[in-house]
Every structure is written in structure tokens, then in C-alpha cells.
Length: 146
Image (cartoon, rainbow, N blue to C red):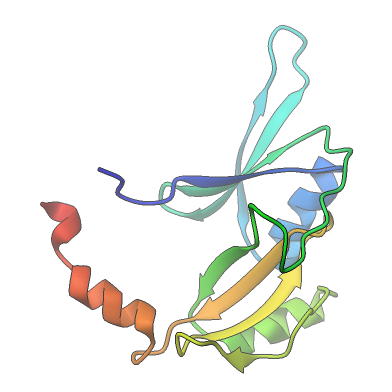
């Protein structure tokens, strides 16, 4: 039934600042913008992650949602990278807020955390061959085509 995650939608206080963060700090490309009818106002900005995978940024964020380890609901977004050390260096050079050092996660992934201009927590994750995600990917390989 479900074949992949299509997009993650976030509401931003300042769409342009948030889009700039995803472009310049995380290195994503802006795919397209959608405008409201009939007034033509900006409705959303779509950032390209991978084929058919996007971050969708909506306007009019006003009320902050404080996330901690007890908050029910959304915890964080996670983006996979080939090289966590290179990603950390890239982000530091662009002034990204770095919320944790690189560490080995419980699943044996290599990870660190940052956040976007609205405080949304972002995990940056590298998948070594012996991590649980790769083991699961290998176990489920071929099932998507059935």
C-alpha cells in the first residue's frame, strides 16, 4: 500500500527564512512554489529532497509548539546523508545551529541534530552497513515491487 514518504509539511513563521535555511544550510533545492487563487499569494514552497520526496513549507506560523521528551506528536525530522562528518562541516560553514555532536545512535546509525529557524528538530543520519536500518532495508528488499 504505502510505498514511500511523499513529503513532510511544516508551517513557518517566515517562509523565505525557512526556505533559505533548507537551501543554504541543508543544501536542498527549491522545487516549486504554489500560489493561492484568486489572490496569487504564496501558498507553499516545496524543497526537493529526493525523487518524489519533499519538504513542504506553509506560511502563517504564529503559535510556537515547545517540543521536549514528553510532548505527544511530532518529535523530529530525519534526513539521510552519505557522510555525517562532511554534512556537519558543510552545515557549520554555513552557520547552522548544531544541537549535538556526532554520535552512534542506538540503531548503530551515525547521527547529529540541528534545528530550523522555527525550532523544528532535525536529525542528520548516516547509515553504516551494520546499522539496523540497513539490515531492515536488506530484509525487506524486493517487497516494494510486489
